[in-house]
Amino acid sequence: MPALLVIEFYLHRFVLRKRNFQDSVHSPWTIFIFVSGHFATSLGLDMSTVEVTLLEENLEKEELLYTSSHDDMILPSNLNFATSAIVGPILCIFGLVGNALSLSVWSKATMRCSTAIYLSGQAVADLGVLVAFMFSDSIQAWAPEVKYSLAYGVFYSYLAYPFLFTIVVLSIWITVGVTLDRYIMVCWITKAKIICSERHTKLVLVVTSLCATIVNIPNFLFYTPVYSDSEIHSNDSVGRGERVPGIEPRMSYELSEFGSSPGGVFFEFWIHCIIVLLVPWMVVLVLNLLIIRKIVKTNKRMKDKKTASSSEKSRQSENQITRLLLTVTFSFLFFMGFQCIIQCIYMQRPAEAHWPTVVSSFAVGKIGIVFTSSSNFVFYCMTGRKFRKELFIMFGIESRYVQSSSTRRLTKSDSSRSTSTSGI
Image (cartoon, rainbow, N blue to C red):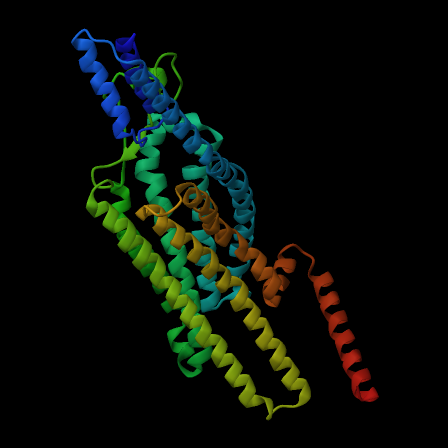
């Protein structure tokens, strides 16, 4: 009986490992009991009833520990599925349509300027981000068996994963370019025509694309496909991602030697997370604060030199620019900042962090990238009067737009006249 119990302990630990419980910590007293039982059995002695009882109690505690850990990860797992399979794809579909419309509007001849060129490039980069997210993340939630397909392993390792990071970095730095362009237009008015020419803007986009690709070259080496080098993949059905009775499927991609090395960890955290993501975040924040400060100072200085009507138009223009800055750019700062912080914690895995909370936050944080790439069209429509006008013209409803705009202007002028007459 004691010998059988020791064998049962071995089998129990094996079953726990098969259930992804490699991190369980067995107490020293449990190990002492099973070792002493092994020697006692080999010497022909029987374990005492107390020892047997203690061993059974420790086995129950280990199963409870597994159950507790498993239960803690239910919410993060469900949240990750919801963001990858439901929320993410909905945002992606909306963003694909919105970015396509944005690209059509910003590319029109009537919108030609340096800012429009930047925003056209932004729309193209955001389209790439949304497509890459669906093929690298959402598809694994929709069809989990695809992760066991060798073809997908090659696709994910050498195309989907590196392309996603490359296009995200490109989108972020184009946002920096748009902000810098706007800063020059507001703060360096005399030099803006020379610096912010269409030729210079296109050159900046080309250089930014090349730099984003070069910086992300290590990401092409981060994962490697798992080829048919064991009996797990010796069956053709398993290689196609199909389950075979009696054979546990294996992921078709895994971290490469570089990805799991200290050099890979250093690149992912310091180069990618800190320099490539945090630095542009700080640049965008500082430039936008300087732009808002300049606009406020300029309008205060010119307020006394203008008529009441001109001052009102200036104030409306200031409010419109401020709304544009607060919506588009600070939305980017909020979601990208949250995602960057969570990603850093996720990568470092500090001992004091509550891991289920970190995983849940990471699942929400990755949607920040998708939301940022999907929401620009809404912000353009909300804050860009000229953008709305060109969008309506593109859909053939220009007359309605002009009529509604003229009606609003007449209403405002009538209200201002009645106010001035009544003296209120």
